Amino acid sequence: MKKTAALFIFILFSYSFSIKKETITCAVNFNGIYAFRLDNENSAILRFYADGSVLASTSINDYMDVFSWFHKENKDMVLKGTYKIKKCEIKFEVKGMTGEQTYKGTISDKTIEVKLTDYDSKKTVKRVYTFFAL
Image (tube, rainbow, N blue to C red; front, side, top):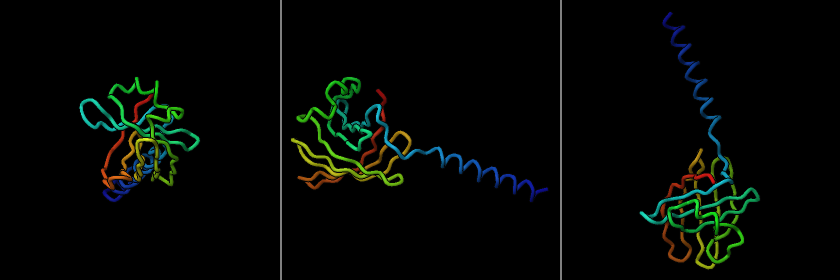
């Protein structure tokens, strides 16, 4: 009886683990932004597009106001690039009038954890960006 119960628990645990593993998505969301709070007033933000484009900038923490200017056509206020996803890893480089940055990290359900390197200063920081829908 103990062996049967132990086997049942093992099968149940294995099955539940495989379900959780399958529900993790390694894709970026296109209907909103990813934000990392820098301080009480400002955040670093990312926006992804289905065509492989990515934008990066900083903004005030009222994310709904971001969508009026945070788009591909706004060349003055955004850094642009293209992203690549392989399994759950993401890589991209963005460039613009205000600088150049490289991002490497991993995608989870609603977050992206990255190591960001600034091209000019060579400084590297780790950030966890959280998704906010439109």
